[in-house]
Length: 215
Image 1 (tube, helix red, strand yellow):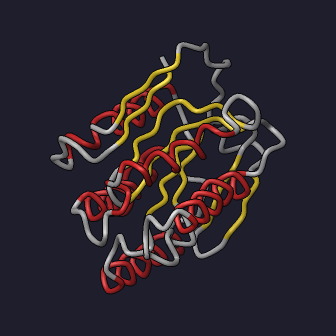
Image 2 (cartoon, one colour; image 1 turned 90 degrees about the horizontal axis):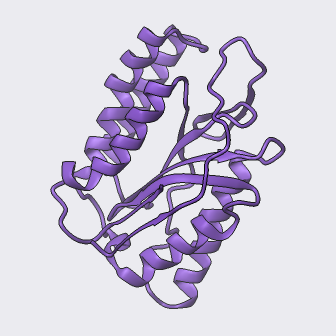
Image 3 (tube, helix red, strand yellow; image 1 turned 60 degrees about the horizontal axis):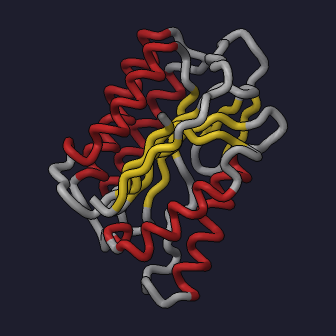
């Protein structure tokens, strides 16, 4: 393990996704949802983390599912979606495709620094893991802060710093889009925290990752 840190600071009262409430929706290649201060689980990955053939097949199947199952979903449909797509994507990422540049301690440190840059100001981190070719982050945004803006800030600034330091030839460094999931219940929150904590073990990693949790 490169580093493992925890910060003893209380979390604000947690709110959960309300399918009948107002939802702010944005879209690039993938749809992104935001609802006030509801915690969000985000995954972003290196540009070479998935073979293009695998990614194209995944996105085509995902698009068919979304057309046949318009959101918001009930809990059964959401579990089905994540079993078919989100979990499958995570398994493909854990296979370790591409350069896996995030194994490098200097690169991982830059990414970690960006994650913490506005922690406590624009959002509050709950936990994250920096894996060799992707990053999982669980956090709560302040009500007026844009989810796409925060994720783009993490990726854009870290990429510039990494290239400026000559640490990677991968350009672009990050895949342009990201995956996100609003937290719907206390059990869902617990499941996501456990997933982040267990991800290195699931990928059979003993080194080359950064795991952080807020105590």
